Image (cartoon, rainbow, N blue to C red; front, side, top):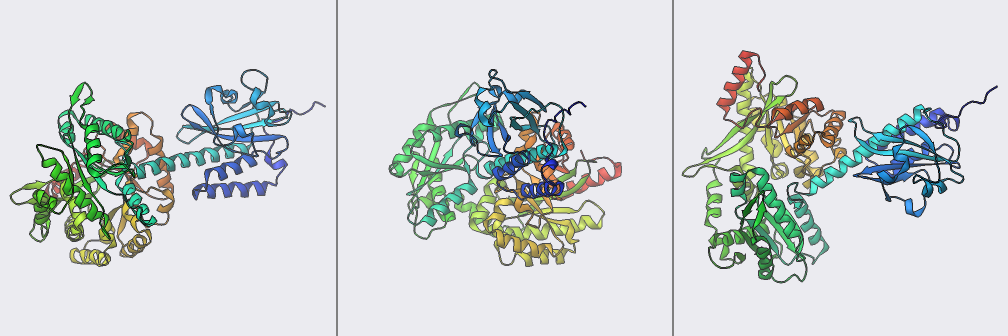
Length: 605
């Protein structure tokens, strides 16, 4: 009777009870969903792939650029191959194997791996591929037994899928963590990370930096207006590179626009010396797409004061920077002193005008459509605050919103916006028009003791169906005090109001904590659209798929081109918001568009 041909991989059930394997696989799914450490999860997968550990070793590799990185194994590897060892994929002989086995020979790069298993002669390899088709690594078996090609088993197929899923989620979270802490244009730290760093230093006691340096690059806005957004971003990236090259700069974060906060290294000299080095580094011309650009810098320096809040410290540094920008002669570095505040009357005047703007009827709301990808119909609107100041005209939100947050005026202004948005939405609801309305809620509002009552009053005064009110809250606002935020959100949710997590991917992003918050919708930040220009969008696709697994519809912000719409439709996005479907507009214009689209029975784009 002929001898049976050996299978590619020994079935796990020959050595372990089927029920035990099934339980192990369920545990792995739970571990991945709970974001268990990647090494632990992949180590368990490798051990399940080796039911006979005395004669085999399984290794899970992740693909990092052009390299294979050792992530886990079924047992101890030689020191030169222990995680996180890297091997060029082109030099790994098993990488060319596709679901098949090969005999390990002396040549063709196999020699270093012959000793992984005593008497080892065979290798089997399978590439790990996500649902989206991205190759993220491989699962490789080294064995002293013959591994004939073409005979897989169900457990190996599932283990491959689990390994690919675990690596995909880990890569996603790694990218989200980077985005949570960095400015995506310059690669510098972002404001949230800057604030966290200062809090960490202060908590250490006596470790507060000697100064806060605020840098602004005059001309960056002009470059954007004349040469376009991409050239403006290139200018900021080149400026950031120069800052990273200065040994005196310990920590640099882009706060907004052309404003960068810097914490100097200890012993980096006084504020005047530090300012001089920064000015020298940035005043040299920038070469941008064939243009030579001079973008003069201005520096404001403020030393810390006892018991001072970060807001106050930033305000003093900004006043110094404003005084530096106003200088036409002499050094454009200013050290804050009490007289400096008098040199920035335009900022003080703006704050004076902003106080009471809501009571004087100067604030208004514009509404930007949120459109369903499936049928092109308006699903709702985001209410965006505008300020028409007498004698000044329309003030840029980029100028007055940060000021409102710094001064605490955002609580009063937010209360007004909540009431006005509910009133307008109720009018649309009565007339049978799309009436879901998204209203932004700041961290200060969420922390305010009267927040829940403000929502109750707005609903009661307007008569709006609570489900049509969607409060948009950023990740950073939630993470400032996660327990308090969850408590307030839960109380508001009991009123029937829904929540959208805004600007997802720019704060302390974590898909894990989304399960613990009463969030009904995910709004993905526009920065993720850059993936679409490269053809594939694995990060954006992963976010959409995992959000759907959590039962959360996804809105993608910043959509400006029809090509983006079509690609997002393929990826499964639920709604989009951006200039393609409509700029922010007065209520009357939004209403007229909705009526016209309804009469024509057509999509809104």
